[in-house]
Length: 199
Length: 151
Image (tube, rainbow over all chains, first blue to last red; front, side, top):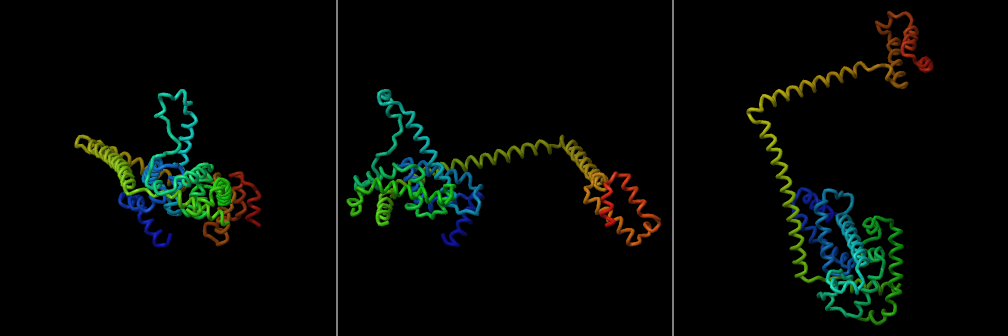
């Protein structure tokens, strides 16, 4: 981000702190698409990503007074979003753990939470189903931190030091997660690379 | 490296969501409703607070309460002023026993300076060491302090 952009953003945040909603709407418009990509890659489907992202914006709006100008807004906001994604995944995995076996579930199946939302969306329609499934599986198999780091680096295009700030860890830790993510993805995707690469 | 690049390219292409306009409209609508609710709650809270303050002030400044308010204000003022002067005097009359060694040396050096400058009052005193010794006995001071001054 360039100097004047940072300046403009700080002015907007000051306005939000004074209670001017339009300034916050401007920030939402600026970051929602990129932030949605992060949420989507973490939680795995559109609906949950939408809910988590809305929660993140609401939390940022309520706590904007805590934002200090020594960091950038998106780093601060991504930190909120990442924490909410983690909470969501923890809740989801807990719900999965306590889900009764199929025999007991005969009449209650509708109440359980599915891990992957299979509802069609415009994105999926345009993709080769087989390749997409293979990639989804490979990415979803990554441990939470590896997936987070990979998404922030290669889908969000953030720098390693920014990722370290967002995840509240050292840059060297980020590098380790990134390396492991790449190694795991290579293992999962290598057999398909020749076929998928051309598509 | 080429394989890594291929993997990154593939994943970023396939895992970057492209929600429709309708999706964003729904998103914006939902978020707007939630933020509106927060704004409303904030303004309600603020107005409740302002109303409470108004109520209290309204009650306090009723004509029937006015003499009482004036009396209480005067009492607070008098107590405040007396506390201020009590503390002020307490500072002026600070005991030498409460001084640290360093502060005490400074004080004694000041007395020494009075002698050295030939202060009129000090000239009347025949033997300054008598005074220093009296001070030492009176406050049970460490003799090394005097050595420090003499040194």
